[in-house]
Image 1: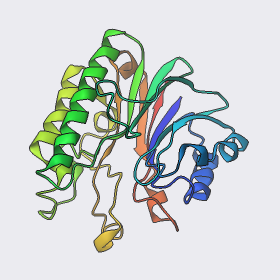
Image 2: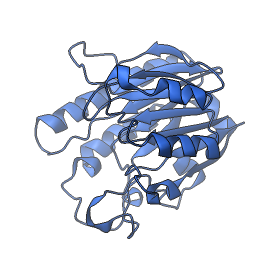
Image 3: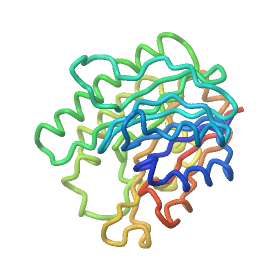
Length: 256
């Protein structure tokens, strides 16, 4: 089973890119983030014609998440992260696909920091930690996939000081990610590629794609019972260089 996470950065605008990648890469499950469309505008019909069932929660402007399944219909479990009924941002969805629970999560960016946006990011990640701990207690196979908006270590960002004040690499952001790992989750890409950057995001500004000035923000965390099934992991980075590309590239794993 091939499972991918992809911050599509506007699913309607980049639908041709998405459909071409789905046809070429043939992932079995895809977590999408930053749909940037109203719920009713999600291109479910076009994806169905491409062979993918979908569950989603849209939201205009910055948010929106979805889970696609090849030749299957994902079974929706929840469409929001528990812990704050007042939070109406579309940042989390969870579904069962072929015996595995898969998430699509889009953690808050948190900039500028310090400030209320960074406070919201840390509170959101704390809610994710509580929910993730509950998933582990259920002892079901889970892939926590999505855009965490955290570059966990210095290896996950190109050599620079220009991001030093950015919320993506702050000690508190990295500590929140580390707390997830400490629960027993396995960072699939880093496990199979311990010494390579494996960037998944290159900002549109300052020629960062051409300079390979990237960050690893998109992660697939595995519950303990999936670790022995992990066979491959990678990033389809060539998508970032295409016309009309998202500023992210898909990260993926292959499970036995």
